[in-house]
Image 1 (cartoon, rainbow, N blue to C red):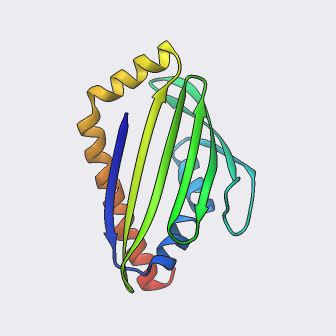
Image 2 (image 1 turned 90 degrees about the vertical axis):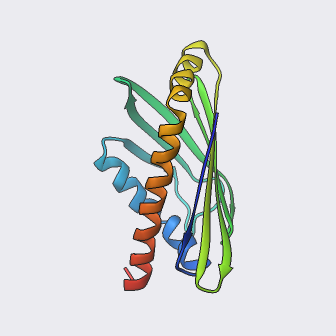
Length: 155
């Protein structure tokens, strides 16, 4: 199952990459939403090989997911591989400089099931695929506006 979303941001590619690679900020945001996040391999600046262990609830059941940054090409690409008990995922975040002050952020996510329970969960996600796509695009649009504000105000 695949999802993608893209958004244009009024900020230079380097600034957008720096803000998107502020993993501490994302970790805090996830924790506020009830996700247990532990970075197990830390690197500064961000680079391939960084890893996280996460735990959260989906449909009332606890899920553990390991995430590895498999690729990092500053300032154009970040790729993350995730694995849980019955599912794998690949998330690609691409940055494209449209001009000196405008950047296109493109996110592609794919999920694959490795077990029957994971296939059933993925099938239920597929039933709500169009709703999930709209939510993903809406959240990316909100995130893009936040990045623009942060860039504009130097936060």
